[in-house]
Image (tube, rainbow, N blue to C red; front, side, top):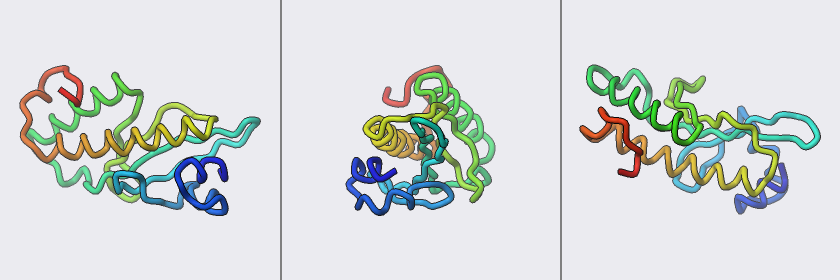
Length: 135
């Protein structure tokens, strides 16, 4: 965890503060945490919380949420779900055992999380189709 903290630009001694249930701020400002899988080598599964709850969505917003979920899962291997805090949460399906790859995944989840927020807040008719988030 100290190597991951170093990759994230945090003090090495903050490594244990990255492990769930602790939250830290990711590069795009989203609340993040990693789940630790003990082993040799240990692995982490990163996640980011989006500042929006599923209860805020209704009607066509729910259809848009499901379309986004399908895209993120199918194209990126990330699962859009609800966090224990009641917020939308983006979670990696893969366990990552390299600190550089884990830091890269945390960067990715922050960027994708921000794209999801924009997609859910904007009335984007493209989300009714099977297209990537960047189109």
